[in-house]
Image (cartoon, rainbow, N blue to C red; front, side, top):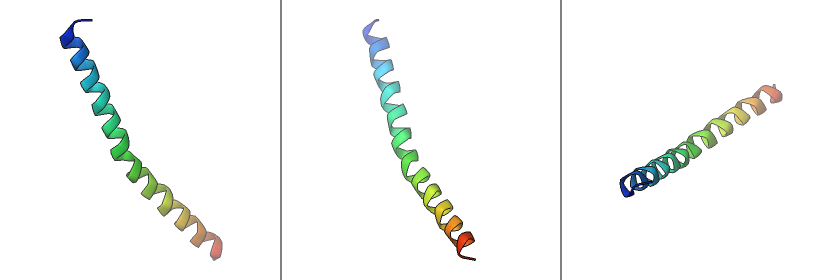
Length: 44
């Protein structure tokens, strides 16, 4: 692998990592909201 390919690969990896970490809070909110909705449905 050339230097340019290595740099590109590491940049891609970092980009993929940041998107995962940006999606984590979103999924957390989704799960939290869903469980809250589920508990409300059970409480009825």
